[in-house]
Length: 283
Image (tube, rainbow, N blue to C red; front, top):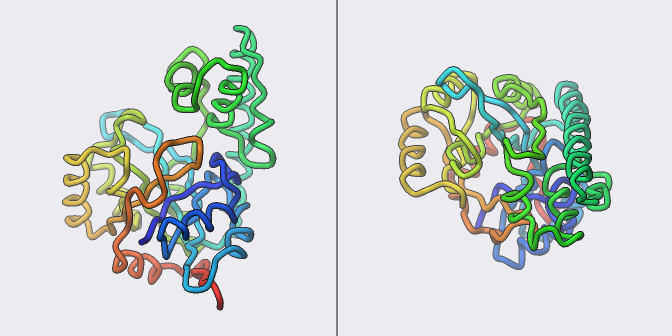
C-alpha cells in the first residue's frame, strides 16, 4: 500500500518521524510520504527508520492561499514531493511561515487566556512549527474539551471568536518554488468542504497551466461525488490522481492508509522529481 500524506511531531502530528515509519510499516504500507507542515525537519529521522523493502518519499505540506474563482481567496494546502530542501526559495518560505505561525498562535493564545483558558501550546509544539492542533492539545489538557477535533469545533475554527489568520503563500508561487527545487506539487484535498470554502474548477485548470502535477482526490474529507468530479477534471488536465490518509496520529481519528495511491501513479510522480530521491530501506 502507498500512503502519500502523513504527519509527524515535526509539525502537528503526535508520532515521532521514526515512530510514524514503524506504524506505517505495521499497517502494511510499503511506500509512505512524510509531509509535515512547512518543514523538512523530520526527513533525516524518518529516513534512518525505513526498513529494507520499504520506500520513503520525502515531502512537505505548504500553507498557501488560492483564488477561489469567484473574486475571493481561500486557504489551500499544497503537497510538495522530492524537492531539494536547501532551495533558497523553500528555506525563505519556511522561515517566513514559521514566523507567521508563531504570531498567529500567540494572538490566539492571548485571546483564550483573556477568557480564562490558561493554555500553553508551546508545551506540545517543541521545536516544530506551531499550529492550531498544538493549541487544541493545550485545551484538552486544561479540560476545556475532550479532544482536539472538539477544540477545533468549539474554539479554533475559522472566523470564530479566537481565530487569527496567517499570511500564507500564493499557490502559484508555491508551485513555482517546488518546481524550481526539483520537486513535484500536488494539490492536497482541494475540495474538502468541511475545511472551508473550495475553489472553482477553473482555478485548478489555471494551476495546471503553471505546472501543478496532480490532485489528491481520494482523501477522507472529500465526498464521493466531489472525488469523481475531481478525478474527471484531473483526466481532462492530464494531472496525477493520488490518495492519502492525511494521518496526524492522536490528533485525528483517521488511520494510516485510510486512502491510498496506485503504484503507477507513484512511479509517474517519482519520474518528475529531480530534487531529492526516494529513500529505500536497506540500500
